[in-house]
Length: 79
Image 1 (cartoon, rainbow, N blue to C red):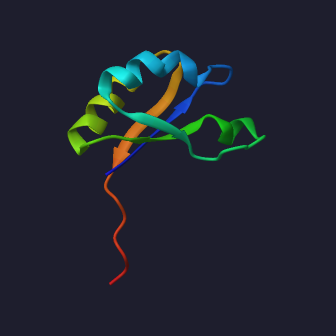
Image 2 (cartoon, helix red, strand yellow):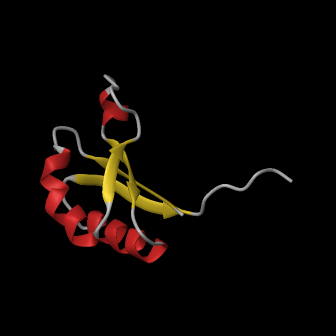
């Protein structure tokens, strides 16, 4: 499972550190070093299980500084 979220412009990732720690997940920039504000706010989540990622995404969806948060199944190779 993949989990991603997008911060509202002007919101710093550090403000979500307590929420991320509570859920035992890590956030990494999806587009590190991006100067385009529409890309700079996107992050991926990593955690120990799909259930953990799902719970973290649900918590992020309730945060006022988060524009979007969702999970999706990992892609499969064409076949």
